[in-house]
Length: 416
Image (cartoon, rainbow, N blue to C red; front, side, top):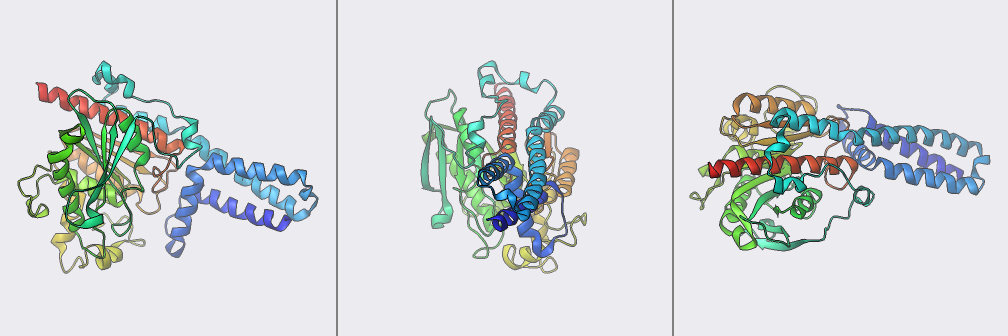
């Protein structure tokens, strides 16, 4: 038992250390580092509770008379210090998110939201949520599952998260695009904390599947996203949604696709067979997206994803089809016509580096006539908002603020 306790202490410290440090050139250790840092960073207090509980239980059993167990206790103590630091760091997320919203939207942005919608602006989080990280369902929200929006079978299905009460003027719509490196993932796996949060507050949320590589190559993923937007615009009124207001969000590959969709409205070559559909989006909230396939700023030459993109996603090299690679980059499409955008990125993201988001946001701010909000979260790893955590729930609150502000501004423009 002493040996097992010592082993667990070493593993726990490794997980904690992976969440605390910002590592980059990991090569073959990248997947392990990401997984360890992600789970420890987003569930720091949960890890702390089970580690302390296990220690207390074994103390009653008299295990600490063994020198190896005593060493293990010392190692666990180091892990506890790190976990406490990580939890405090996550609790500071509202400071960074609030500052980002004020810088991007104005210090009095909340005052721009109508009084009847002020109740939707959540500022606090519920312990019951992040202590049960994988419990998503909420009272007052119904889910319509597996609705077809295209003819690609399972990969062209969507789910609708619908409030049980009506809203005057119809529900504004939030479209969720899942991540997974363009090769894995499904609509049921991501975005649920945000979608349930917004549906509770009178938004209609739509989560989509899309065709995946290597079965298909880009731009088929983008075609499916555009097709889903067209379907929403044509059909969402049947579910109480307002087809005139659609915001888009997604993480990782979903962040890439959501940003690209927002920046390329009505691009005809990506709308085969539905060229007349309006695929304009009114706001976008990409999480830790990939914004430049070409890495034109040479941010990550030693950890490039060019091989993955060449072999599986675009299925052609840069040299063979530079135009396709360039067209796949949201960075290539920034313009004055970009919709309001909130970009979220973690400093410790090991799969999409924070410098990539900074370059994209800088270019977007220089070109766009609409507000650009950039929230950089210290310590956040890739996929940080997939399940409930302290950081996730604060980020969800901030996204809710941004979307309410964006929708309120859109309503004023429509009535002007």
